[in-house]
Amino acid sequence: LYVDQPLGQGQAVALGADQAHYLFSVMRLAKGAAVALFNGRDGEWRAEVAEAGKRGGVLVCDRQTRALLMPPDLWLLFAPIKKARTDFIVEKAVEMGARRILPVQTRHTNSERIRQDRLQAHAVEAAEQCGGTYVPEVADLVALERLLAGWPEGRRILWCDESLVGAAQGLAGAEPGPWAILIGPEGGFSEGEKAKLRAMPAVLPVSLGPRILRADTAAVAALALWQAALGD
Ligand code: SAM
Image (cartoon, rainbow, N blue to C red; front, side, top):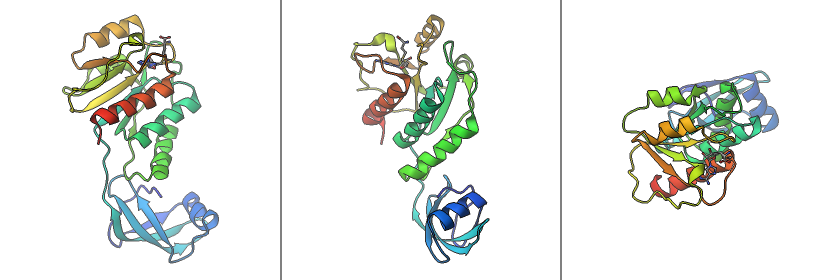
């Protein structure tokens, strides 16, 4: 269970109404039952139910069961698509071990706005589901142009470039350094964006195979490609 509170030996954790409902009504846990907690910072802790109420409760941390496992320093940049498919990308990025998720506005991005709080909640659920101890930050929508203008030195960009379809270009020999994967919108990148990306030394264009993939499939394929070549 994810809680946004400090975890440590003897630390009491107060539960809100939703969490109390889930643990005590849905899961039917009673006083003394053990619960695995994580907060994305302190690893995983075993805690015991000290108070169980209808509108709240208290858990007390007992011992750490797993240390914090940080995912590799990999960012996923993607142009948001339809709601359910955007949710899918966030969920898969957490499962596949991205450290930061950055929705980017491109020329042909279908949506102008995202619900960052909703996507962050999806990231928490995905971390709970896959047994992660870290929750990647989902950033607010930012214009690709602005992001590239202030791009951090040393971080390379794996640009999934649909115009390279068929040109086999793997990641063998690619530098290990911090990376970001960039996935375009359903309409692809504009000529201006492509020119800008081609001019950046940090950018490595890559093909994901001989067929055009949907953006959500491309995100999962690129995460798998990167993890196989450079992940841990
Ligand atoms: N409308 C574009 C076209 O017809 O050329 C296709 C865009 S594709 C649906 C969405 C994004 O997925 C692309 O911008 C790219 O980042 C990625 N993508 C899809 N297939 C790819 C491939 N075979 N190689 C590299 N990237 C791919």
